[in-house]
Length: 345
Image 1 (cartoon, rainbow, N blue to C red):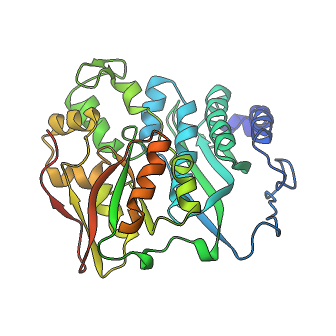
Image 2 (cartoon, rainbow, N blue to C red):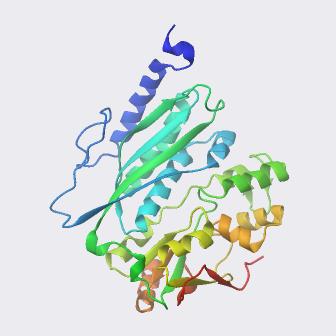
Image 3 (spheres, one colour):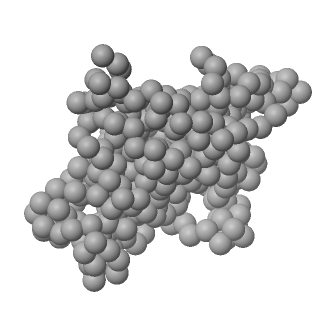
């Protein structure tokens, strides 16, 4: 017998890896020391640029959004999602991305799907100045249903020790300034899929008037990357902390940006909830509490800003023509997020 008789096609895998190398090489910077293909990727920090570099790392996936990609047959945006999500995560520490690795696994290697995913990763990495220096493409017969796969991303960034964002720098009275999301981003898809495809019985190609889009296309909107928006703001040390609103929504993520002796107060009427979230809430008759701990509801990132810096941050965001919303403030005393008002209907 051969390995191929057990469902693993080494020749096909080699062809795919050759394509991956070409896509990865497009992201290389002068700091990458070796091409793709070794047992480990090599990346050198420039000693002239960094005095006390602190490496910041993160690993994540895109959840069951992968099922939407498989149903629609579009996979490039998934690659963008995993990079943007990862960049945003280390951005909360004030770090800029250095290099990225991916893990892609499927039951049987489909070269077209692999190339779409990696092309999206490569494109997103180039846009944020992050080198794709390695990864793993695994063929696992009998483990994944036909046409489905899993994807994870691993990122490493760097920040000067003196400029690392730290929740301990947050003070009572600091403002909470929200940057809008593009949609679901990469969280809440298990509930969203159940509501849309099981409860409502829609197909990915169904046009939904309430959201003015096909439901599959709406749910595949890429996760926003906030680094270009706030890079200059971080360089000027105008921010105390940042919360990336991912799984757990505002309820779960805002406390991660605050010290334990403080809590966030959020005005629920201070930003527009995107139509997709109002639509999902209506389908499932979701309580306000359930919405706030499941979805981002139109808020992708929250900047915690000293009151003296708010006008400066607002001016920079206006210069970039970036929308923003003052959604609350930091208050004394431990506890969960305190909400005032109600979500717009």
